[in-house]
Length: 164
Image (cartoon, rainbow, N blue to C red; front, side):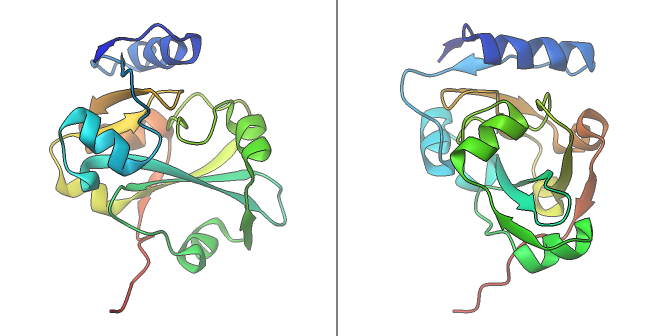
């Protein structure tokens, strides 16, 4: 782990400072693009990773970003109800254009275009969560209760109920 040096990670660090969030953006030599990779690099549980899942609104064409716990699958039906439109898959080009970040590095703030954003209420069970900081190699930690103020988003039930 080392201090951030990539321009995207430095921009996220600046946005965090401007928002009054005291944290450090760090980078790893190995990728942290999946929840499992990030948890292994950081030394936390997969659930403590605040992963960003991006959909495309079928009507609005806007990116719908769901910041969810790393151990959760997202229910498209629940998200669709919360954002009041059907969802479509977002490919890598759409994600980069809409958010300004590559898949695996989508931060919860500083998006290139307006997005609809939801926060998984399951993140609130932790004292600290780790989110991507603009690259698939960079992350930052924060208390989950800082996320609504940072993003302007609301807590929502977005977890898919998986039956075994």
